[in-house]
Image (cartoon, rainbow, N blue to C red; front, side, top):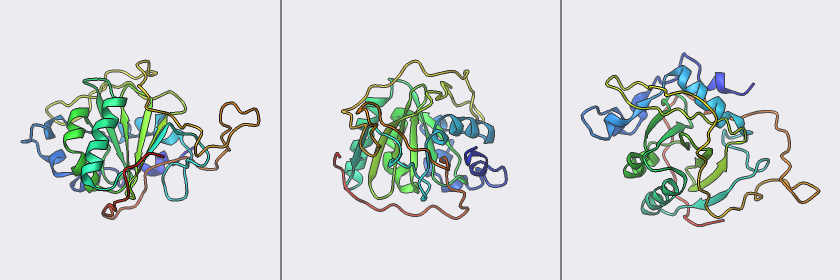
Length: 235
């Protein structure tokens, strides 16, 4: 199947938590105490139900040439990114819900936190690099954030996104509250879901071309690359 196993190989998954934004490793910080680092099994379950359901491009990002998406935005600078993150999470996350952040380099553990914490630390998350994905737990959206400024919102094809209400306990471990199909849904922004996809001959739903591979986080072991700005604009 996908590269989930390669992505979550026990020899390197979570081997460099120091690459995470500082607040995520600070148990004295009010926001840091609300961050949960997923272990290998939890990360594998989340990835297989979300990220790995998408076809992969050669550079380890989602191949939006073969699958549709809801919306695409670009940011210009840190201020634009911070505002965009706030707007996106307010649109796609129900009040009080947590979000998962899956990094493009798997030596950084996948983390979950309340959406408001993610908004407050949007710049820290961006600075950590490399590219990453945001998934509202209990929803079906997946937000891909690339270092060139491109942000793409898509719907998880399988609709099997874990409804795990992952919370933080005193040992900073994940405490699953049960897995199931997502029923809460998510509120969509203006859609351009056929852009980047191949339309069917009937003019109806997009026909997705089969892809030989599926998506996983990168298996590089080096430090994440620094981000590079682009533009905050709709496409």
